[in-house]
Image (cartoon, rainbow, N blue to C red):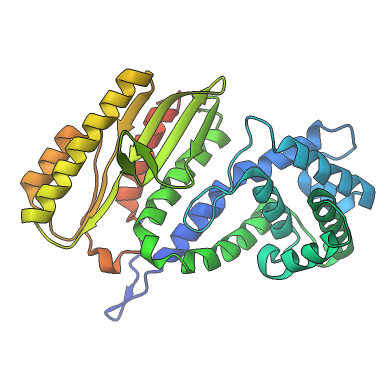
Amino acid sequence: MTEVSLVVGDVDLSHSRLVELFRLADAAKPYYDWLSVLVADADGPYHSLDQLFREGKLEEVTGFIRAAQDACDGPKVPSVFDGAARPYKPRKALYLMISWAIRDAPQQRLAPLLAQIRKGGMSANDAESQALARLIVHYRGAVATFEWSAVREVVAARLEGSRRSLRGKLAEAAVRAVVAEAISEAASQRTCRFDRVTLSATEVNINGHSFDVCVDCEIAAELVARIVMPVKSRETQGGGHANLFTRDIEAAMAALREHQRSTEVESWMVPVIIAENWHEDQIAHVREISDALILVRSNPNSFESLPPDAARELEDVVLRIIASDR
């Protein structure tokens, strides 16, 4: 595909945030598909989430939402991510996804109303299922469709608000968005060689070392593999900061290898460095001691998203590890 320049009259029209938002929205598609599978596997006459929400009776939609609430405790529930690509808890993800499907604002508008309903003694599950079902049945004529292509637009719009409040975490959020997309791709294409792959909601600590992004891979509910990604940004080229960072990577890798030996959990470390200038010797050394290195030559103060080549490189690294066809 031919790249189209976004520079017109010396003005750069780039809108990198758009790429990040839809990357996160697309990472939620396996969850939407999971809901449709729940509909198709039920005893009713409906074959998709869209059909149930467009045609189902109130009691049928309510019953489905309650069944989905129970299914959230299952072992293979896909993830839905916030604006920083941190996974929501399964029950929260269900509430958000169905609210987005009916084009409601689950936090700002709907949550206070549900709190009022619960004050009357109704359980959280009953309040959510009854409220969401009634909204779907009442407003489906105005909404017209619950197909993924329409819901995707709402997901992206809702995630923009949470991403806007995370300015200080944009580098980590950009990495998380790409990793979430890779996990989503493996799940959608059914190429994942593990039973379950999850992106950690927060940094993880392994033998005293913190890693900003972590992917856990399970087989038969047992952790068998792990990908960790320290995300570092620097404005300086070399010297003290570069040396300290390199020593930190060395110590982190040693801790990770010791953790692998003691737990038999296969582990990979993939540092992501965002630096406008960085000494080539330091880069070469970090590349040598790591399993892979993603280097973005950019000023971290103006950084918003991973450039396409770095995003493809990171996605390919993750897919090579988790996908059976790589």
